[in-house]
Length: 68
Ligand SMILES: [Zn+2]
Image (tube, rainbow, N blue to C red; front, top):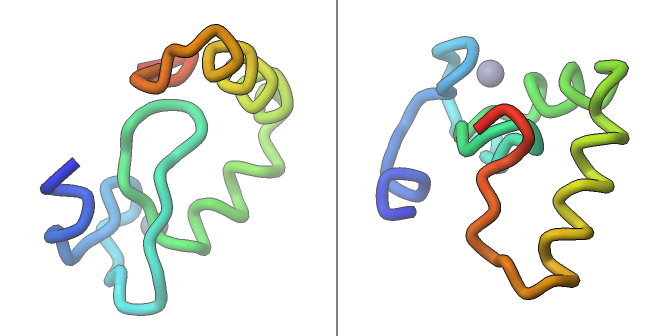
């Protein structure tokens, strides 16, 4: 998690994270907001979001995402 807050570039596109950073829903990548928007349009995004919610309900806060 330390890397998440200290890294300066998006894991996905290599762009700057100055505009903001967010954890990917599909794995533990730290991505920029543009990549997050793109991720939301993926056909499996909803499935990933649902799977993560289920894991959190079960008490698994270390869930790495469906592709992680
Ligand atoms: Zn990016």
